[in-house]
Length: 169
Image (cartoon, rainbow, N blue to C red; front, side, top):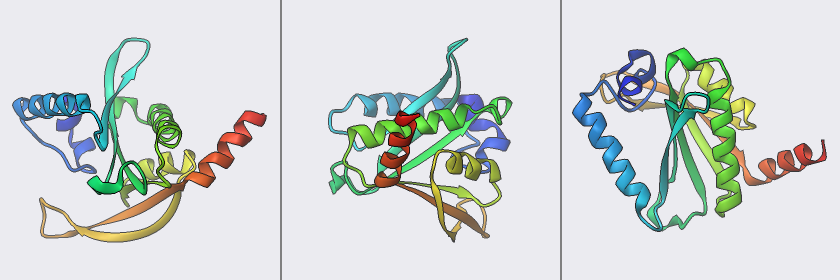
């Protein structure tokens, strides 16, 4: 996970990195503790290569507001090591998370954002059925410049229609 969180090709599009090994360790420990809590409103998962049990990425999801009680919109984020880009792993992980979200919660929409320069991430969202909504600017914490993001969404009804279509095949 530290390799992921310190690779400039990865963190240039994410909210983390570069960071020390100690900070990565603290993030992992805090995530594990949080993931043990009952009634939590977010989840962080490792993306693991089945053949070798190697951690190759991270995917997480959560609700923006504590009082949503697993309804409303859920936000999703992910990152994967560059040597595993363009091999379908992130798409597979995102499909699995979307299936989990829509089968275990009452959420109506799954939303995700990506830097407009991160074309590969946008393509992952599109391959999972998410639809582009809008672009917006947000200040970058590490720069005085504003960063442009794309917002994607998957509505529960669209996910259900896609799931029914796959079952009929």
